[in-house]
Amino acid sequence: MAEKTRITEGEADLYLDQYNFTTTAAIVSSVDRKIFVLLRDGKLLFGVLRTFDQYANLILQDCVERIDIPELKEYAEEERGIFMIRGENVVMLGEVDIDKEDQPLEALKRIPFEEAQKIKQQKEEKRCKDEFVRSKELARYGLSHDFHKQDMY
Picture 1 (cartoon, one colour):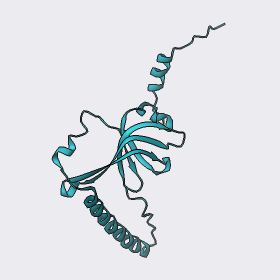
Picture 2 (picture 1 turned 180 degrees about the horizontal axis):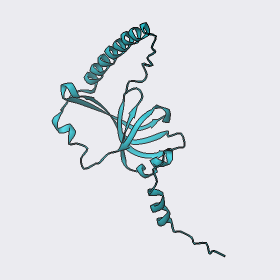
Picture 3 (picture 1 turned 120 degrees about the vertical axis):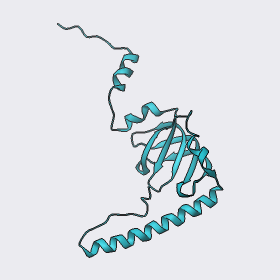
Picture 4 (picture 1 turned 135 degrees about the horizontal axis):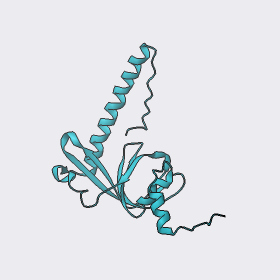
């Protein structure tokens, strides 16, 4: 009869690291690390991931919302503190290299958050109008165009 061997917890971790998870289990290695999260409404959040659940609902600590305006070479940030994110609103998330995170910002000018919000809102309104015109044009050819205002990423 074959003898069963027990693996240690460290060996199990190494074993699991070999697999690319496609479920919320993929988030395990990001707990207690700084991450960025892109939401469906276009918000970009940075913070320390404290916990999550099976629905990818996230809790970020020391959360900061950032608005980038690359065409003007400007950005704005606003402290958000502890922030809960509903998993269905997450488009993308990833770990941030804390040694390099400020490098892209060095080439940009920081502006007040309210000013950046106004610029972002104007861009979103223009995009919605452009997408509406595009939908009408495509409909003339019998094509559909799925664009939802809440999906601004």
